[in-house]
Image (cartoon, rainbow, N blue to C red; front, side, top):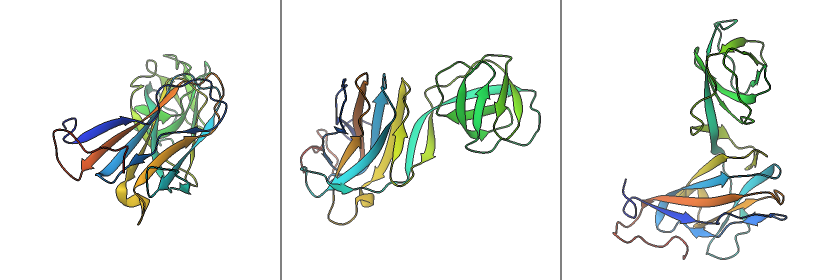
Length: 220
């Protein structure tokens, strides 16, 4: 993919601090694009905060809630040995290391646990790791691949950013998801307290018009 020809990156907020009220991103237009991936990158996070989306017919006040069901969040992998059972752990089981690390299971492959919602504590090699369904394994090394993104389901058109640092979230939206009469989108994040550092970026793709210099996504 080529910048400008195939996709365009637009900052909807720049890194900000001291958030004591709702964070409302700039409003961006999808008039010239068929898809957008909305990225929320978190440094420090003061407290958990809900993420919602709004839509509008113009790059002005976005006050209509936009429905969405899917998002991605930062994940990890943990290789293991000595499972107590060959039956895979179930999706959404909680995973706890003997040393205090915790995460939520996305998939148990039989040799590694793929997880999200990691609490940033270290899974220690050789420790017993217990799944909430009762299965135990032995960690074969510490967690790895902290840059992977795990698909997740939003509940009632929202999800929470955890009060954990160094995480990334992504919401994929097709232009058709906005419905007739709407082509603009905005991200809102509830009050997440004064020690928060985050940025919101949009990566637009499927341009309707190919050009060395792309069409704008901040004017409608």
